[in-house]
Length: 341
Ligand code: HSE
Image (cartoon, protein in one colour):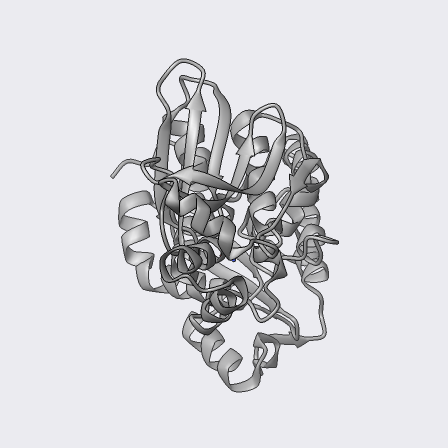
């Protein structure tokens, strides 16, 4: 399968390395032979219809800062959207940085690919938070597949679990801890009695929170993931504007201690019932949702069956790259369902 990789940061490089390392296995098990025919980053594009060498891409990126600096295949200054229009790639893997205000540049990349009848896999939450209902419609209209397993729960298959394993039921409510950074901060406040800013500094030092941590601590990262769950799992047509969001910036240590004394822990809970909400709330310590550190956890309430809770790591380059690979295999199987091992 011919792949256009937009974005060559931690996730993009991790994905390329995985594809390179596991090609033999993918061919043998799934009849999938991934070929990266173009890669874009801020400096431009590198493209070769015969397939680019991942080792060389990584070397050029490390040495020169952009894949476009490759002497043979580099096209400095060319935008991903321009290159996509010309590319014969069948799948766009979109992993540029998330921007929840404009969704760009990912939104433009995804729309260009869908309009040009390319399947899309993205780990970029910005475009989905702002326009997921429209993007799903655009994909359907053009008879192509749009997948985004890595956007919620990193490598933990939260979306696939609810969509596929609970297929026989209808999810009527969701409650989850969808952001590892805030859960780490609240865990430190609970267990070590440190205040918010001390816990935030620890999260930054550990490499969890960004230097500008507002996406995490103000609740918008959780809210974008909630929007994705609502659209994909519950067939709602909602965007970020439909979520009422309160972060953890103003949490007082006394609230955290009070909750603890009552057998509870303060958590940043993202929920869907009659409305979509992200807010700090006490959760009983006996609740399976009450996980510590950077873990994510989600409880799905089906209409007929019992509640199901899924717990796992919510982020990481390799985990997200693995989720993208999972989506790629799924697209391959949907397009060529007759492959037999
Ligand atoms: N910043 C996110 C988190 C990871 O802390 O959970 C990316 O989704």
